[in-house]
Image 1: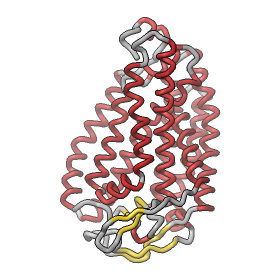
Image 2: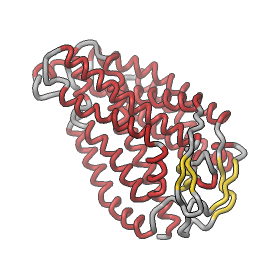
Image 3: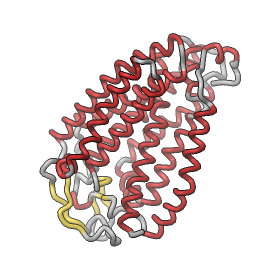
Length: 376
C-alpha cells in the first residue's frame, strides 16, 4: 500500500469519525436543547433524559476517538487547529462538562429549584457545544489565521470574522441537532411527548433546508476558496509549504465544477429532510431518524468534498493551508494505525449496534415514576 493511498484512507477515516460523532452524539445535544421546551413536567423531562440515558456517554467516545486519530494521523492539523481554535474548543469542552454532572446530579434531590438549575445546565450543555461545532465549521470554511515560516514554525494572526457565515453555520448546526434529537425522541417516547416531537420534526425539517441553502449562498458570495496549482508528489513526505496555492475561480465550489457528479451529495443533503417529512407523516419514526442522521452526514460530506484536498485552510497565507497530503504522519505510523483501526472499529460498531438493540423500546412517565432512584 503506497503512501498516497494511505493518506487518502486516513482522510476518509477521520471524516468517518467526525460524521460518527455528529450523528451519534448529535441527537443527545439536540435533546438537551429541547429539554426546556418539549417537556412540560418533571416526569416528562426525566423521560427525555432517560431516552438517551444508557447511551449518551458512549456516544461521546466518538469525539475522543476523532481527536485521538487527528493527533496520531494528522499531527500538523492537530497542532494548528487546537491552537488557532483554542477558544471555541475550550467553550466546547466547558459545555460538555455540564452534561455528566447534569445527568448524574439532576434527580438526586426532589427540590424543584435544584432540578430546574440542572435542567438549565443540561440545556447549556447541549446548546453551547452545538454552537461551537457550528462556529468551528465556519472557521474551517472561511480559513483560520495561521501561517508557517520556512522552518515550519507556526505563527498566528487576528481573525477576520465573516459574521454572516459564522451565524449561518451556527444556526444550521442548532437546527440540524434539534431536528435529529426530535426524530430520536419519536422512537423512544409515546403519547403527548411523541406528538410534540413529531411536530418539532415537521417544523425543523423545513428549517434545515432553509439553513443549508442560506449557508451555501453565503459561502458562494463571501468566501474565497483555494486550489493547488503545483505540488510535490503526494506519495512523498511533504510539508504544507511544498506546494503552490491560488485563488479558485469558483471558490470552494471548484470540486463540484470539476466533477459535476459530486453534486449528488449536496442535493441528497437537501432532499433528506423531505424524506424525513414523508416518514414522519407516515408514522415511520425509525426511518425518519435515519433520514435526519443522513442529513447531518451528507451536509458534512458536502463541506469535506468542497474543501478537498484542503483540511485546514489558512486565511493569512494560502500556501500554509494544510491538506490531507502534507499534514499527515509518516507512512509507518499511518500503516500501523490503519491495522489497529481494522481491528478496533468493527468491534466498536458491533458493540454500539448491540447496545442500541438491547436498549430499544419506549421510555414512559410510568417507568420513571416506578424507578425513581434507578433512572436519571
